Image (cartoon, rainbow, N blue to C red; front, side):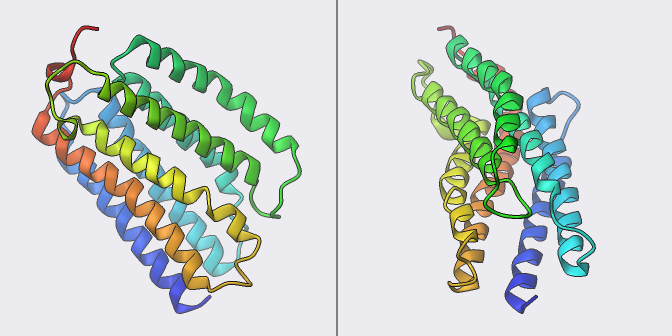
Length: 222
């Protein structure tokens, strides 16, 4: 383990801690379930990443936990976007994505992984599912007839961060096959940029929700 690894992990842990505690700090009983789901997801991610960091530092186990947590994280995100979507069509699309998630992940785990410690096909499937859900929500907002700036929708920030995360992170698994041949700093930079956009979007969502208080005033009839 080199200093680049420790610095990147410390930054990632600090980002997750900031995200989780920001969500907890702004949380109110009146906030809807979708906000609380993001807070729970932030806490679960912090626990998982802390466990993985422990595994890597002390070499007590391989981070196979990603194979289990990846679909859970994906389900949280798609269900959250389902709840905040405005169009019935987009809601049905998210239900379809949720229904396909266990089937798609199960099929991916039947395929031979390219890496010994993580299932690449399952990672790509979850990334693709999240990408479709995020894009569909953003399109839903663009088609919304309400005269409200997009930046006032709290989950605009979450979906935008998720979209960029998926696009950037999709390039990482192929690099894992060759990262011993390239600079480790470049590999870590890809990961940090992707996660900064994702959890930065979460933090922006929490802050925007604190100002908006409710999505009810942003909904309009179709």
